[in-house]
Image (cartoon, rainbow, N blue to C red):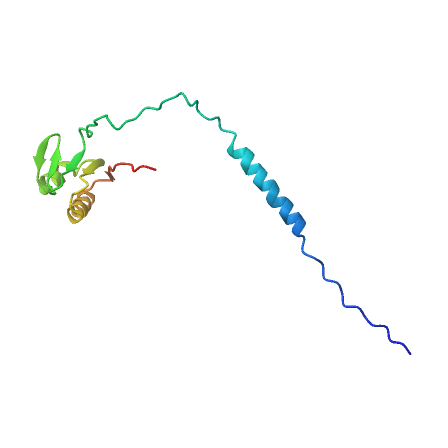
Length: 128
């Protein structure tokens, strides 16, 4: 009596060809989509703003490098600044880069506690 040898069930191979096709189509799509924006002419020289001097807004509270405060060209103490800006809904604060961080945080907390609804700390945008 012969016994029929049972063959093990065949496992189905992974569809790697289909996966390669999908990745290839995605690559083509992103290459085409990325090149749709027109490039500017090579003859165009864009404007540079490095030589322009800017003035801070007249309504801004300025903190100098030593931690002192100025508003509209006049020196202010922290108590005077809190009294002056307590009724303001929005205050723009321009701290110097070298201003002490502790003084900046204390002033910001004092302004918020005095009733300032929105405190905007103005910074310089870095190069991207």
